Length: 404
Image (cartoon, rainbow, N blue to C red):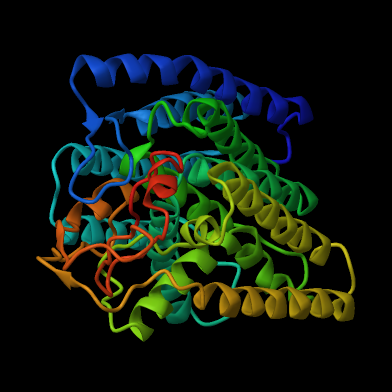
């Protein structure tokens, strides 16, 4: 791995970005050709059909670049086999997500495949960055793969959110891997960032194409695998927390919606417009403003993770403590944003799959029955559905859809 030329990292990033820029318009045409749209209705907040297949462009732009780079450096038969297995699993998840985008599947095949993916990753890699016995390592690997894969799937809830945050996380992952001497891992992370960056111009508000489950599952799984393979020269520093910081925003969002839904008597498996991005829009930010704030937060968390690898133990602990307190404070503030409306009647609320993406989740909400409008013109909603006082503003927030 150490014989990877320094310039190849830039070439992999640029190659993946250019391919994504070229492939995304082609995917857009293909989606229109085969009528592959996310159609409004059933509670979705976007007003016009938006093509899918953005995830296909991400996959097609990433896989060839990494395959060519791996064959060029000849890092060894075992490394090539491990990479091939992980790439095959990532593509399989993308295909499953693509089928799910087109035709809603039961959640159990997805969950089963994700668990199987975690087991496969455990068998072909050397465990996690966490210390502990082998049984713990195995369970931690499977849990990390399932949680992070779905965390990025759920993060795809507003135009540009998942792609941009995945790119930022990948760039900081590259920096940490480079500092650790893991050059091939860093180059792969940079290629993943390139694919996300190349796709982003077409996905940023107002989005012309959605990545769908195929793209978000693909990004989440690869970030899970790459962070699992990070290795640090010493365990005396709090470097155990670095991977958590690199993907911290996705984990924070998933944790926040899970806890708040439980506190409001709602199943965490049912969707809602109650993610971090939705709460930021609720309190007055524009769509772009909310997404840029998420980007900035991801940059801060990634920077802290990178600094922790370079400073001493006490300084690293202090930084991680401050970051933890800041995350806790942000969670408390966002948890009290009143996105749930209590007193309304709802016709039905279909059960949601535990791993739904934003494009399908909002469609589970059925049309609600209410006694009428209040003085402000707002139609009350159920205690399971986020209540936004200005529904027109919410509809214009970027054609974003509900997210699990």
